[in-house]
Image 1 (cartoon, rainbow, N blue to C red):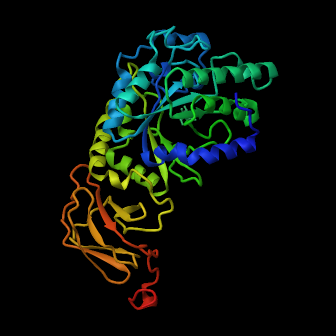
Image 2 (image 1 turned 90 degrees about the horizontal axis):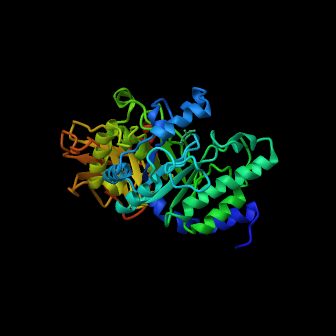
Image 3 (image 1 turned 180 degrees about the vertical axis):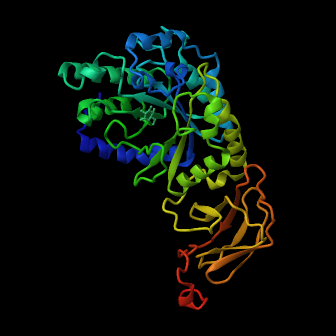
Length: 429
Ligand code: GLC
């Protein structure tokens, strides 16, 4: 076994291999988060056990009645693929402490109870079938294990609990072939990485999966940040995780949740916000109690997938992180270093519009979906697009992307804030 490194050396070592390990992730942009477990039957948030103060023995009954339909994970993966997502992250064990796999260290699992099947194995097979990268969410907090709380104040319990958490993740990272992401969550009740033995634990786990990507929730920065329910860029690699409805990660009644749920346009808007600041979007669905996909997610995700078929080049791949290019009031821009993609949320009915701030002329301007050229003139500090259709050309989601290709720096200067200063001329004229 490799000698263990101290925290500083460990962080340096993983930084050195990061570009290699993260290259697919940085281009993937869009993934599906799945929150599924016995809590899905309650339908009142995956925190129900705590929020409703249910005694462990009462809550455990949910393990017996937990009955995912055979093939449910395949339906998730099929929808993720259809939506243009590139990876999935499953809650293999949420805070309730129930393992969705054939665990030898946690008897409270889906093979001993309820379905009597290894759901993680089904999930992994489904991801592989649809060529999706595989992520395992793993809670640190545990409301079922007796040491899950004692670890905060009893050193023996802490050591036992450290070993337990590592053993769970060792199973996950040993028994299912290559795994791409380990997604920790909620480091409570111990509030420091030392309490979780995170530096040592993560080194042990990485030794099992040399390409593993780990998120920042074991209280050391690791590979990427995880803004939750907001789309704020971080300095390092980042992935925003978002519920589908702003209400719950776990299943809630579809008919009621529908009104709070994202439509295709809102999802594309989120994706744009992530892409233009170099982040990924991990969008959650909380499957129904039987594991089927929640009805309200199907149409929006399918529409997004259709749209990405035509407009994926504005999303996937490396985008310039701090976009120094802009659009106008109807759109937001992403930029891959050569092409500026203008995502039109609001399409002008006037047949003409102008995009300000570009001091260099583009080589070409066209619709991304079919390459049809767009007439334009460059007049020194703006690009005037002409003879545009009066209706939004995108028929899938009403979000039209215009691609402007530059063979040099677009030389973008954010608007001329005081047009009168320049007498209508460009800077330097
Ligand atoms: C939270 C919640 C949890 C959810 C997670 C997803 O911290 O505790 O229920 O799984 O966020 O990011």
